[in-house]
Every structure is written in structure tokens, then in C-alpha cells.
Image 1 (cartoon, one colour):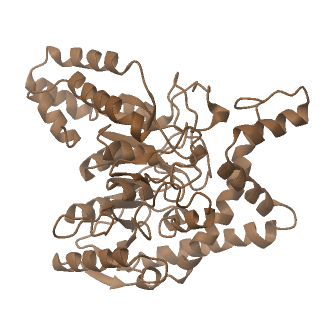
Image 2: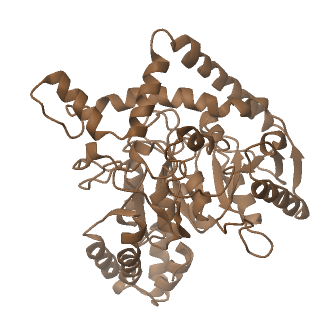
Image 3: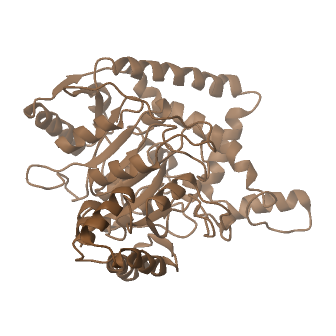
Length: 476
């Protein structure tokens, strides 16, 4: 029906559509598809009431007055779905875990405040891997989300519900969170656009922490201008999050130079279809006058190992609060220690427990220096190496994932295979730089894959240089 925010607002100005019309369109789609796809965990019961209130605000305005009004309320009436780990006051936020099944948020996340001030309407909360731990949404306590493009395949994760809602036309905009690729990987699997902003550019206040030095909130859409608009609205310094920073002005560029770490991409474990997509896009960029060069960052090969040492360590610390006393449901046995053990044992899923155990081991007295401390040193070295490369290039191009989405159940018993799917995405989180995944299409408008499932292209830029990402995506 509606392709992007600009089209929706143009029709509002011309009085060809109402906000209630668009909300009803998505609600009907959700009712029709959700039982099969399991994208929404909850549709909020006040959605239509708010839509009608917003319609009433526009009812007596002329087209010119509506146009002026929408210049200040840039998301007015836009239906948005929210990942289940971002707090909306008065609504359940379960992080797709049994431990928070009845937890009702007592305040709004800063991103929710900003979206609401811009006029967005919240449709509901969408499925995810429990506490954002996973890459397939198979780790949700409330069942797997199926890929709308082929229900035999996973939607990706951990923001699988957020990406699938866009792909299935069940929201115009969605929010997800990205710790090591949790926005970009499902965006790739669902054939949509997903942005991981610069670390600290968007407030994490009201986002349930997985790994605090990695997490960032970002948008999904089918339209790059929508992604840019939502990012512009949600970014900015927040006194409630000390890791946020004000807007930094990147250097202006007359021409964009793209670097491709070919030695990292053209290797074992990356599908031939993915390799072909990089070759094809490289030629397309050159045809548009973009300089494309081969670059080498040797430490990229160690990024996945660094990630899976540092992140479980932070997970172990952040998950300590879910003990049935401070947060979450409790299993009562009338014995304090047993209560704690049963609460954690019964209400947390296997992937969450796996990462807690791994992180606790890494931080333990005998291994802290050998693993965690060494990984921190290597992280700083990786940051410096990548920063050095951005003196020579403006953007680094890689695939988003080494292959297309896999079938549901295919890797559920092989955590290592799931972790390897993050090989191209984790670097942006380790170095705190922005990255975006966009769908790859051949000249014939096809996915270029045998199973007809989409591939994603990932562009990474220097700190706070999201605008160069938006520019190169628009070129393609």
C-alpha cells in the first residue's frame, strides 16, 4: 500500500488517506499473517484510539497547514513496531524471555520518547532471540519467527521480528538493537534495510542491556530516506546515558572511496553467491565513478574470536540482575539458594545460560588475564587499525553474512555454526562505527541466489559518518 513515509505524508496532505486507514491496513495484515509467521508478540490495544485522535488533529487543517505541521512532526501517524527489549511505559517488555513474561515497563526508553514526540504510533512489540542472544530468533521463549519470504527459513536475529515485520508489510518502520549484527543480519535475511548507528550516537536508556559497550538501537525500513529520517530523530546526547555524545561533524567528501578487504571475503566458508555479489557491486560502483580499492586489515580475522570473549563477559555481568529478587519472575521452593538456582535454571533459555557460563568462565580469577584482558588489548588495536584505514577510504564494503538465511532447525544444535554467521558484522560493534545492510539485487532485479533468498551488502563508515552510508546506498 504505502512504500515510505514521504508517500504517506503526501497522501495525508492531499487528504487521500487517513492515519486510521494506514493503521487498519497494518492491523489487518497482522491479523492475517501473524499466526503463521509469529512476528508480533503483542499488538497494543490503544493503537486505533491514538490513530483516531491524530486524525482529529488534522481534520480541520488545510493541506498547506498539514504540510507545515508535518515539517515539525516528521513521523506523525507513522505506524512503528518495537523490539521486545525496548521499554514503552505501561507495556510489557519481556525480551522474549519467560523470566520477564509479566514485566511492565515503568518508563519510556529515550528512543521511544523521541519517536512519540515526532508523532509515531506504536503498533506493538515484536519477537526476538531471548535477551538478544542469538542470530535466528529460534531462541525466543515464545517460538521462532518465520521468514516471510519463505516460511521454511529463519528470519535471523536477534532482531528477527523487527526485520520480518518490514518484509511482511506489517509496519512501516521498526526499531531493533544491534550488539554484533542483530539489525544487519536479519535485514539481510529478509531483504530490507537495517542501520547500526555509531556507538553512543543513540541513547541506550530503556534498552535492556546485553553487552553494554556494544549495544546500539537502530531502524529498519524498505526505504533509505526513511532510515535516515528515523536515525536523525532518535540520535543525540542523553543525560540519562553517559555513553552518548553530541553530534560530530564528519569531513565533507567530494567523492566516495570504497575499500574492500578481499582477503577476508574471498575465503573458505563464504558462499560463491556472496562472493559474486561483491564482485558485481564493485563493478557497479566503478561504473558510477567510485574509486574501489583492495584493503588489508589482518585483525579482521580475529574479530569474531574477540567478540565471543568480550560479549559473554558483559552478558554474565548484565544478566546477574535476573534472579527473581531484583528483576523477573521467581520460582519458589522455600529455600533461598534453591530459589535462585531454580529461577535461573527454569526461566532462562539454553543460549542465555550458555553465554552466562562462558562469560563467567572468562572473567574467573584463573582466566581473566589470559582471555578477557588480552581481548581488550586486541580490541583497541583493531579500533586503531580500522581508524587508520579510514584515512585512505570512506567506506568499507563486505557482505552482511557469509550466506543466505538457513532453514529453521538447521543450526539450532550447533551454536558455533550460528556464531560464524556474524563474521562480517561484529567488527562494526567492536570498533563502535556505523554500518548498514542493504539488499543486493542483480541487474535483472533478482536475488542472485539458487534458493531465491536475499543477500545483504554491508557498508561500514568512520565514527559518526552515517551520512556517507546514506549517500552510497542512494547511489546503488
